[in-house]
Structures are given as structure tokens and as C-alpha cells.
Amino acid sequence: MDKLTPLKKDAAPKEEAYMYLGPSRPLGLPYQRGMILRYRPGQPGSSLQLYFQEQPQFARLFVPISKLAPALKAVSTPGTPLYQAYAAIKKATAEARSNA
Image (cartoon, rainbow, N blue to C red; front, side, top):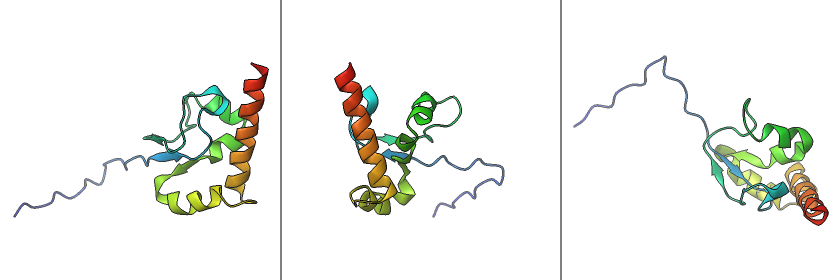
């Protein structure tokens, strides 16, 4: 049998993946609902930082995969913060499209 190699103590932890749960093509961006990102959205240097500053609700729609099950329920439950974030971004996207 093969022996498993233990992790080195100085090994960096693996970055968690995130899933986008908002409306498709938000604010004209090329994101689709269910899209997986292999990095934390909005981290320093991210192209999304500007959008997160302009639309703080947008950041809520990127959920760590480890928290996906409750987030999927919350995004479709009226009154939850995730549901409100989805509605806010959907409205902002519709307004941006009508002004274009």
C-alpha cells in the first residue's frame, strides 16, 4: 500500500472556491448564475473591487462553496439578506440596461 504524505506545516492553505448566485450578466459583467470562481472575489487587485464599492449587495452574491446549501435556500427566500441582494442587483442591472 502507498503511504500518504503528511502536509507540511508551512504549506499554505488552499483557497476556497466561490459560486456566484446572482442574476446572469449583472451590471453588464460576463458572470452567469452558478459560475464558480477559484479565488475570493473582491480581494485586493480584483477587477470586481470597483463593482463591490458601487454596489455592496453584489459582493453578497459570491458564496463560499462550503456555505452553498443554506445560501441556495436563502437566495430564494423573501426577506433574507441574500434575497434582497439578488433583487437589488437585478434592479440595478435592469436600470443600467435601460440607460444604455
